[in-house]
Amino acid sequence: MYVYVENGIVKQKGLPRTGTLKDGSTVSNYNLLPHDVLIAEGWLPLIDEPPETDDKHRAVRTGYEIYGDRVEAIYSIEEIIPPAISEEELQDKARLKAQQLAVKSLIQAKSLSTEEIIELAPLFPAYEVGKAYSIGCFLQE
Image (cartoon, rainbow, N blue to C red):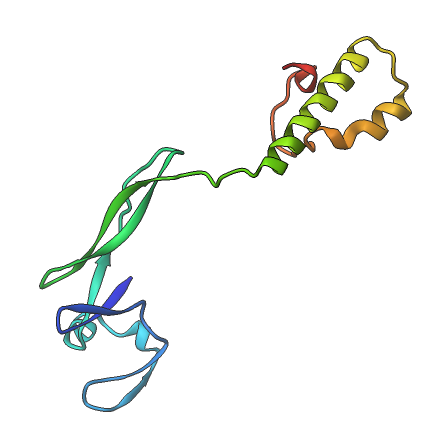
């Protein structure tokens, strides 16, 4: 990956397929030009290695450090703040949980028919292909 640098500022990220050289000539396959030609045209290699984060943080690119032979992306780590849940969403979630608990106890007591269980299935998470499940995992709390 290359970035175009002009007056110490990154102006463009990624090479175009067609471009105009400083001498005014238009070039097809601009993105395939040799490294030394790209350097002469103001393009520098981009080192873009976001830091590792956990599920509660994210790496956010805040700028670039420009050197004579390369450009390095600069990142900061930000906390991911979950969106606020409305009162209505909290009530809906509580209602669904209460329904799931009631149905679980009926299923465990074997007091529902197969047809009734099928009708109530939408109350529970959908089966995911490739995910490992244990027996009774949907009935556990």
